[in-house]
Length: 240
Picture 1 (cartoon, helix red, strand yellow):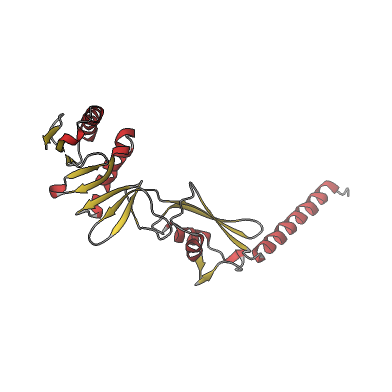
Picture 2 (cartoon, rainbow, N blue to C red):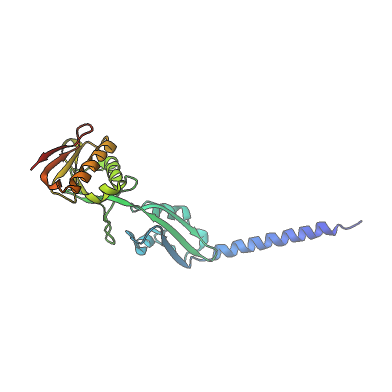
């Protein structure tokens, strides 16, 4: 009977590979978390700090550092981090040598709401974001009888303002008045700009741009007590 050495070699090789894989797997499971590394994306204005994130990387009531890799629930840890109201997205993963890596993208505030009862940010996704003890964002101030149900409208208004290079420099605050109407507070001049309800903003801001450019160039802006954009395709002003 002729022995097929190729088959025998293949079986031996396959067994060796299986042994090495199993050995590596068991060894990898025994590796403990050596360090926790936190990386913040996009910018240096950190509303969160590393200590805040470390407190979210908790499993079974204790830090994951020095726990075996085999018991780490990455999905649960990632969910903990994402649940924080200052976090927009996050990923948590392990390296071969036992490093727990966490990458975080923080929310981007576009406006700060100030009411009698509380203060908070509205972020770039129209979601509510708490203030931070670590950093204060320089964004438009929103005052008046603001509710969180106004987030979408305020997000639309602020996005239009910030998307206009000229108005972005001229408007410093927004105030909500009666019947869900809004007024703009200008950097130049002591008058308020009444825009009414948040609708037809493109037309209203086009008219406002034209008016401000003219009155600033001829230095007559201070002659007006009020500026009203509520009426269709026109700017109605009252003089002092």
